[in-house]
Image (cartoon, rainbow, N blue to C red; front, side):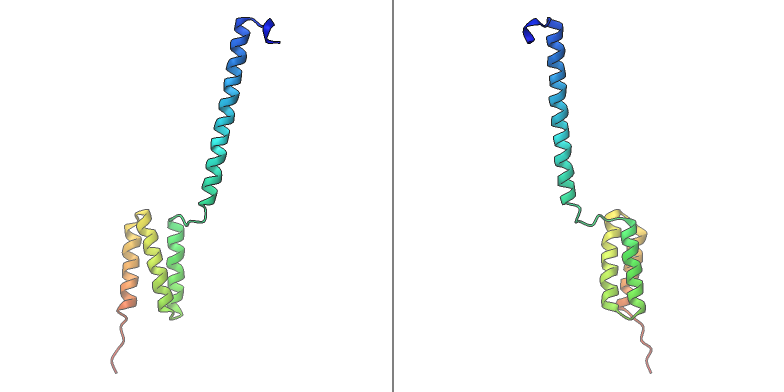
Length: 108
């Protein structure tokens, strides 16, 4: 079959074969990366939305006098804000944590 081909045709067949092998290799690499990234999807990626959600949950817990839960949520939110570089969020969480630790109780 390949004996009747001209030199130019042989080069074209070789080039096509190389392109096909490269495409299969690249496809396999992308498939493995996709599988790998999906296995790491259980990790929580810090975002402003998750930090704000944690803060809101902390405020709700604080309103129900669940100060331990509120403190835990504010600390998690603070870590999220630190991870995304949101200085205002970190300061806000520090203030909320301070207020939980130093609650004002009027004397009789």
